[in-house]
Image (cartoon, rainbow, N blue to C red):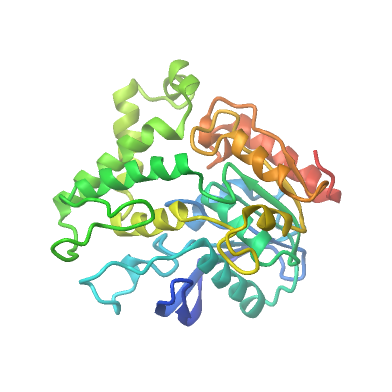
Length: 357
């Protein structure tokens, strides 16, 4: 049983961690299953729409609406929740305010508790930026859930990951002749902010897609030409144009920049009561946490996930890498059927009785 459409939950004038208020804010969401069933919270990922999460849900899956009340909340900035593209009442001569993982999860908590009447969740899980939100849930509301499954993501965006994102951001901004203001900063402010022309938008998004192409999949994925053998592209350029540029051109540049800031500034210790102490934040996790990095993920490598798990209280966390050459895409969005089945099996065991698989 699923709601037939995406719904909106109004947040009103929503205070952000930066001290800025986002006026008339709202969060988009979709639910599957009965509200009386144990709840599962499953946030979206960088650029992803709510529908892009549905590959992991089904009556034949671990995340079945027959047993669970599954809630997919959309990231602020994704084009469905409050975003530059759907808030015309905001001034158009300045960028959208900076949004953090903390802001997103605070909004989701209001949706889940006040809006949907959920007092406790069986599990929070997510891929990529969804994993970042999962870690944020685990540290921001540590007693709210029994289980956490962040896959192909991190509790704190690493320095190397920040550098990768700086390249993505700079390529996008170059499309309109602009430059990055630096790590965790937006567009360089010289000359004032202005909107994108259609030509600048196309140029910037194509560049973003081509920069991302070297990071999303592993070296082995390209070496073995999986894009031809399993995905059906004619050659590398066909893959670059129709997969990577095609994906990027379906997005809005300002939305992408809002979400990129959220990701680049990710840090679960940047909140009370941790106050920048990352080890304390990891020790603050109470829910059993199954961390599933991609063995060949180029920007969320298994070593980073192992570092996080090692800093959790003994017995709370376990790290099990996807045995895949699909890089970051091992964890989603369902393109690799072998990896989907591997993930589903792990979730099924973990959900059943909380045992680590």
